[in-house]
Each structure stands twice: as C-alpha cells, then as structure tokens.
Amino acid sequence: MPRSGHVRIARTASFGSPNLEEQMEFTQLTSEPLHEQAYVALRNALLTGRLAPGQPLTIRGIGSSLGISSTPVREALQRLIAEGALQLAANRSIQVPVMTRDRFVEVTDIRLRLERLAVEAAATRAGEELCDRLHALSARMQVAINNRSFPDYLADNQTFHFTIYEASNLPYLQQLIGLCWLRTGPWLNGLAQEGRYHSIANDEHEKMINALRRKDACAASEATGRDISEAASVLIELLP
Image (cartoon, rainbow, N blue to C red):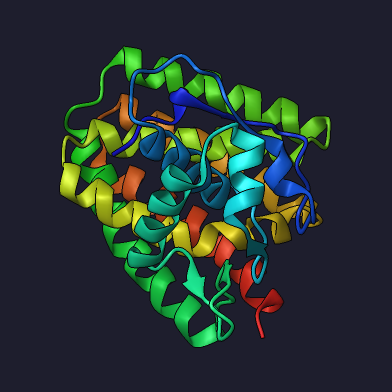
C-alpha cells in the first residue's frame, strides 16, 4: 500500500470546504512517479475525511494545488474511480460518492470482520516497539480531543489503525481494509460534534494497546469491534 508519509495534507482543511483541493501539497521528498504521489495525496484526503461526500473534484484544481500537470492527476483519479473511492457523475464530472444507509451497513459489517482479523494477526506479532508507537499516537489523539482539533485526531486515528494492520503482515488483507476506509472516510467529519464518541474511541484504543502488549488477540479484537461499532452508530444517523 502507498506510504502516507510521502505527501502532506494540510490539517486545517474542513468538512465540505469548497477550496479543499488547495489544502493538498507535495513535500517533494520522494522519487515515486507523480501519478503515485497524486494518488496518495487524494487517498489520504479520503481516508481522513478531508474530502466531503458529494464534493466535486477537478483535474485542473488538483493539479494546480499540487503543482503538477493534468496527466498524473488524471491517472490518479482514474485509479480511485476503479477502486470505487470516487465516481463519475452524470455530466462526466468526478465527485466523492454519497453513501446510502444500506451500503454503509454493508461496509461496516465487512470492516468488523476484516479489521478484527487483522488485529488478531497483529497480536501474535506485537512487540514493545509497536505498542510504544501506538501509545504515543493515542496520547496525541487525546491532546487533539482536548484541543478540539478534529483534523489532527482523524489523521492520527488513521495512522493508529493502519499501524496495527501493517503489523499483521497480511498485505492483501490490508488492501481490502483500505478499500473499505476509502468509502467511509469522507463521512468521518460527522464525528466532529460528537464529543462523547471521542472519549470512548480513545478508551478503546488504549484497550487495544494493552491487549496487544499481552498478546491477547481476543481482547484486541473485541476492542476493535467496539471502536468500529461506536463510530458507525454515530455516522449512520448522518446518511440519507
């Protein structure tokens, strides 16, 4: 899977911002092809809720904000359309899909199975270094909660979960999980006003870490399931 560290997404972007394309920029610290960098930038924006459901995207706007030509942007967009993360509208414009409740329930059920499987696999391989990294991310998320900095929380939350999934050493499973997150990510800013959820979520993160330290796959899986289910119970109320 592409490494998110190659591209920086400004954390000041807000849900549904009409100028969100201007919030993305390259760090220019990678030798990867431009189309791959554009893909990672857009993918991260989707995963962390910086692109809103129904938001239109333009090749020119993205290319301008990233400082690259239209060709690599077009290739990146075509790849995300093929993955179902973006869609072509009736007028051939590109936009972030709007999810129905039925589809959200389906994706959530899939996530519960896939992500718990990944966490169980990670628990058998987890060491102190991994758990210390996760604890540092959890602490940063708590600071973000206290400061009401939800973009920071979402970015660290995504890093937290995928750090665990990478530790499973099951790359195809990671890819499938990523496809699910691409579909639910644009709705994540809907959690911003739900203060109770933030505290519950970070409590579950700590329970996941403690279970991983003990190599308790069952407890880690249960905490993951609660984390996903709590978020889903809030987000489903926002869907048409």
